[in-house]
Image (spheres, rainbow, N blue to C red):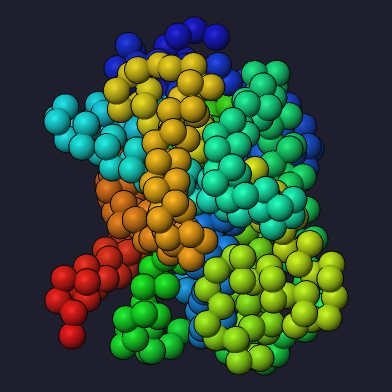
Length: 446
């Protein structure tokens, strides 16, 4: 195939390297095959993205929200997942249609100082994500194996080396590992809900929005934490990159097919993430809030109380196993997102193992300091704060994504339809409004 045929529709700079070049177009897509076989070829990137929607940061916010407010914040989880499905669909559209990821588009479209600022904000979001993974994995090691929290924090600095080894072998191996761990997490929570059956009428009512969200600052803080833990900035950069791992036809028909299958992949994966997130909050609501334990806000407390409250020792073990699987799963997306952001914005290339180690060292410093001075309670508060930081970074990734995918010059025939543009700008407005409300409550307390 000639170079001109492989050029992105946007006409971007030819000097720009392919996104994640070591795996770029490395997964074959069968031609003229049965639709199911074609879908299976595209199956995978959405689950790498879904990992970020069920990482340890979600656990902290969901446990705190479920124990304090029962099923009320299920509406926030539903809203956040619908937002995520639409925004990730835009990432698929951008990556497939243009052959560029979001970071590359930002770097070539804004002045250099602005690109550096956006890079710093993206790195902040990635470090906040890594901080949640770090603390969550260390907590799981402590709960399951009795490893001290401080030692667990240090051990997790090297936990991604095996996964990076799998990435070098074959990208599909990495995707298979991710899907397997997600299924394990879901199975653990299904069993937990059998052991602690919820009030299903209350669950259904919880998915309906409540005005209490806007009048209760503590509830809003948790809601924004859930939003930050669900719609994650680094996932927008990452998804627009890893959809390009598929070797689809680069004509208009091939790209249109890739957008359809890639969107179906991410939507199904995020439906699974919605189930897992809902199960986390429902479990906390049925096991803690319904029994008057509204103060349970830490993962450690939840682990310790599950067994005596439910009368089944295995309940706590299942909770810990699912947490460990979630933490290990989430280590992958931070590595890949860090590489995408650094190469896209700065055009710097570091070996993935070095990039991961640098990110972990940056994240481990605040975790160790807080653990040393404030103990386990401090790490839980830091975990929730990391998710609020992620939410605050969202507009700086969402707004460029909407601008790029709404540009006919950049997207050609794959530009967003009007209805999608309007809906996604409303989503951006909701995200920005919630963050403004949080800042005003913080700066001007009543």
